[in-house]
Image (cartoon, rainbow, N blue to C red; front, side, top):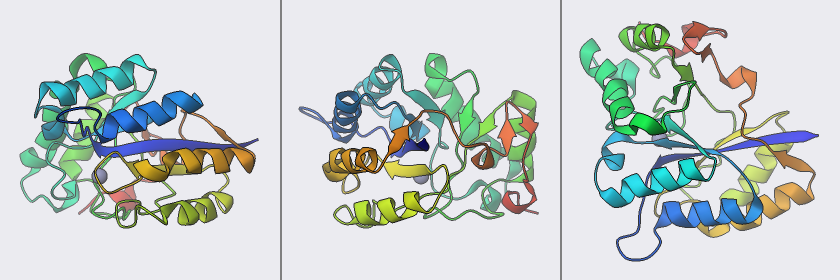
Length: 220
Ligand SMILES: [Zn+2]
């Protein structure tokens, strides 16, 4: 079995009238019976009742809801004010509320998907440990936001070369949605099995316990 895990970042993106991007992503996933994790931006979740309904629907359909910072504007390790870097996590947790996964999933903002010491501040890391969060990184990032047409070919190449790909896609305008159905079909044709769990090497902190290498993702 060749597992693959899908995650969707930077939503919710509800439609004003009719289905928005997040609803369309949910429709595709439901049609294929694929469960994933939605890492939401706190202030987008707070922006409208429609955004909230997207997250509630995702949760009701068995997807997991994770925290992807409040503003998604600066990697936490580059925020000079320690309290402000922690608030990026706490404000979003408060907004997610009852939809929180028991493992308190948190995905740091990388700024274009880059992994490095800018991902976490010292203060944010201490907060994550104290509050039992789980940090979920990634190992496949086909840049769907850059290229909503040909991300699929990049994604297929990435998953073929990764023993358990954890892919970052985006439920935002101009990203993966138009070709998501085709990608899932092709991955299955190639023998991949979709799973909701995360590969251990992408989870350096689990329920507040450091289980991987974090020196390379914490600033200072
Ligand atoms: Zn993001």
